[in-house]
Length: 254
Image (cartoon, rainbow, N blue to C red):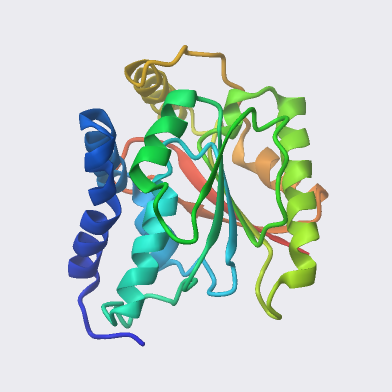
């Protein structure tokens, strides 16, 4: 059930609830969660665009970092249960079976410490997205990480994502889209893409990680690749309030 809570007020409460668990994971985890959720437009965008369907209960988060999306999903569920969900926002799953894949052990440790207590318990896998097993899924989320592997490896990851979505068909609720949410930088937008790459490298260093080469594509090439793989694709600008050239690709398995 929904209420007349104003979206801005609801978002403020959601931001607080989703970041609160990170206090117990240390100062860095807490400040990173607050800043990421507060400044990155993608998280509120997913809600306001209605991109997470109620039947998408098996969620795979590739490049999950410290598990912020798992905390957000849980807080969204709790807000709806307490009837604090705005009329303007579409319903999201009441309960999620979440799997996060992350290469960096320190991020996995922060995720486990902060949100490992959630129910159902999230599964955090420390591994390479190019090699890690992907469970049957209804929704796969890849935000700003696919450019860390070269072009052939990108295609292999996306092929594995398609297989995970296909394997989930047997237990998926009728009418629920098998969906990939993929945020990428549009390499055709040169200035915004350069800025996003510089910030990406800076944040990577701040998190204590080694800066690696990246491989981008123009938006037209990302779209064509997903279409060849059997997805129906639409794109949404996802850089509001930032100087970046980020685009969210909403790819539903045909």
